[in-house]
Structure formats: structure tokens, C-alpha cells
Length: 232
Length: 232
DNA sequence: CTTGATGAATCGTTGAACAATCCTCTAATT
DNA sequence: AATTAGAGGATTGTTCAACGATTCATCAAG
Image 1 (cartoon, each protein chain N blue to C red):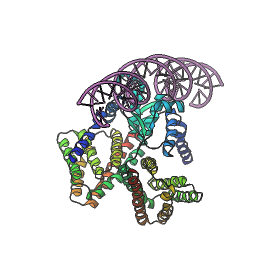
Image 2 (tube, rainbow over the protein chains, first blue to last red):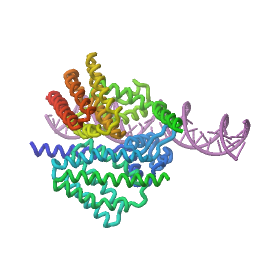
Image 3 (cartoon, each protein chain N blue to C red):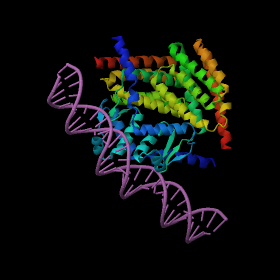
Image 4 (cartoon, each protein chain N blue to C red):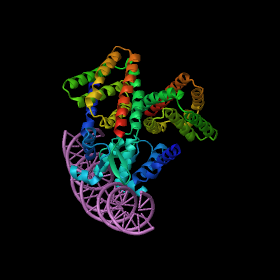
């Protein structure tokens, strides 16, 4: 009976893949990608007609896609004016870091009871980041860094925390566009991440939390400084 | 110039009221009310045609309203099958409480640096709950209880935490429908809330956190027990 | 009792239409 | 010259009708 239960669990886990078909969601996927990678810089206005023709979907469908992304905080909808790629204010960046501090430190504290695989996952993304750095692919380093932090909150094994974290980090990508050099922003944290992962695996959550909080402080300050430059 | 800034701030605070015009949002408000107060029990299917005719809006507008509520986790959208009032599983209840533990304990720890008004707000909702209890209005007691817990996370002064918490509690209301007697569920916590508020104001976050965690344990257990009954 | 086919009901998506609103450009005024 | 007022065009907000796609319930056959 337990084998049967296992099989049922695996099958039901695959369900979301099947459901994934709605045109609006597919359009949202495309646009999300373009927003995140910077093809559509913050502030860009997304014309319904233009994009509708470009992607070959009707205005109604496109609008549903816009709604989806607005709810993810990647787009903003202004009445009778259209949708724009979200422009993160400095206050937004600070707020995102405030929430990350809460969720990720909770993740670190949960590391002592987390399953082995979850901890391995954390280290895996550290390795991925290092590999990407050796290839000089700094965008990939950024991605690996985000996955690393998502793996930390994944230690809580909470679907809602996972989703919240995913959305937070997608939002944060909007802020990265103000950073000119990706390398100088991402490279220093490779070592930090490795150290934090080791502390987690060795079972020293207190020190891991301190290191993590230090990371937040410097990364946040770096972003906010870039914002200040950009404004001036 | 500061008077000018003040005026501008007050004006921009009133803006959301003006913007509030979209038909979809108004429809969403109506449906949200009906879902929360139980007129539309969990599992109910919301037919586009039926509800569209009932409310006198087009299917497209209704669909936008559905999207809004789906994002609030009050409705679930199943492809080609329609939207349903969310049915919270026991695992969902547990997950919601897991996230509440994280956010609310963070709020408690932030109480030491929170402004006076924020702490007053916490106590205010305790009083409201007591008043509602004296009127025998147990639904209002439940509402006051939620506002009390939102006030605790509001100590963090983070818009994103506020929004997350609001959504969590709205979701949780879906679970309350399995509780037959609202009184037996809400009444015991009036005292707990009062004690926690006092501890916060007197500057004893450690004890407040312990009390809060104890509350979570009993409330969660109570809900899950009701779920187990319901299933059997 | 299970399997497979049929048809009704509902959703997904499109396209068009019109009203409401915003933006731009021009002209008039101070 | 700078500001205001207004006209016109462009875009969004909303509705409607239609058709293809999918699900569900029914029912017959094995």
C-alpha cells in the first residue's frame, strides 16, 4: 500500500505540468522572461496592440497575461494609461530585503531539522555559481545566487514561503538593472555563499545567520548606492 | 514647502479611492464578501455565465475578477473546468500557520523598535474583540482577532509583509467554515490576545513570543482536529 | 463492473465595436 | 515668451457575439 501511495504522490506532483496550457499563462511566461532578463527595461510601456500583434494573441488574452504579471509585481497597471514594466523605488528594494531577512533567517534556523537533500540542494547552487563564474557568465552567477537563497528558504519546506520567496527574487531582478557591472556585484558573494552553506551543513545555524545578515547589509547597501547614483 | 509636501502626501494617500473604479475590482469585492462570510462555501463552482448574468457584467470582466480572487487564494482556477471556491486542505492550514509563526514572531521581535502608535493599534484590536464579545457578535470577534494579528506583523512596517499577512488571514477564513461554533473557537483567545498585547507594550518580547507560539499551537491543533472530524 | 463512444454544457479565445480617458499639438490669451 | 484652452487622434476599458476546445454525464457494449 505504501508503494501505491508513493506512486500516487509522484503522479499528482506531475499534474501542474499537464494543466499548463492557457494562452494567457504562456504569454505571461514569455513576457516574464523578457522583463527579468532586461529586454524590457523598467519603465517600458507595453502597448496592448503592439504586443498583441507581435505575439499573435488577442487583446483580451494579453490583458489576462498582464494581470498575472501585475500580481507578481513585475508590471504596474495604470488606469487608462496601460501597463509598464515595474520601476522599483529605493524603498521597494529596502522592503524586499526586510522580507528576505525574515524569511531567510527563518530558513537558516530550520536547517537543523531540514532533510539532508534540502541541505545538499543549498550546496549544489553554490557549486553552480562557481562554475558559472569560471565561464565568465555573470548573469548565470546571478541566477545561481538567487537559487542559492531560494534553497535556504526551501529548508522551511513551506509551499507558501517558497512562492513568496520566488516572487520576491523576481522583483529584485528589476533592481539589478541599475547595476552596471554584474561581475562586481555578484562575484564577492560566491565566497560568502560557500561559507554559509558549509556552516549550515556543519550545523552552526547561529554563525550562518550572522553571515547571512552581513551579506544582506552589504548587498542592500550596494544596491541602494547604485540607486542614489542613478537618481543624481 | 513642508506644508506643500504635507498636502501632496494627503492627496496622494486619497488616490486609491479615486482609482477604485474598475468593474472587475467591484465584482471581486462582492464575491470576496460572499466567499468570506460563507455564502459561497468552499468547493462551490462559480459559473461564468450564471454569475455574469446575476451581476450584470460581461464574461471578460468577470474573468478579471476571478483572477483577482485567485491571486488572493480565495478561488482556484482549473483549466477548462472553471473557478471554484478554494477548499483548504489540512496541509494548507498547517502551512498557513507555519508562515504565520515566521511573520508574527518577527513582528514581535520588532516590537522593541516599533513606534508607539503601532503598539497602540495592537491593543486597540484587543479592545474591539472584547467589545464584540460582549455584544455576542462572534463573527466580529473573529474579525478583531485577525486585525490583532495583522497589527502584530504591522510592527515590522513592511508593506510586503502586510500584504502577505492579509492574504494569509483571508485564506484562513476559508478554514473557519469547518468550525461549527464560532464562539468556542474565538472566545478563549480574547484573554491570550490581551496578555500578548500587554507584554508587547511592557517591552517583554521574549515572553510575548512564547505566548504567541503557544496560541498558534492550540489554534492550529483545534482547526486540524475539526478537519479530521469533518473527513471522518 | 469496466470500457468506450456520444452529445450537451462550459470554458478558452478571438474579433469587433463603442465609450471613456489620456496625450499631443495647435491656437489663443496674458 | 510663457501659460492656458481646446481639438483631434490614439489607447485603454468594457461589452458582446461567435466558434473551437475540453470536460462531464449519459448510456450502450463487452
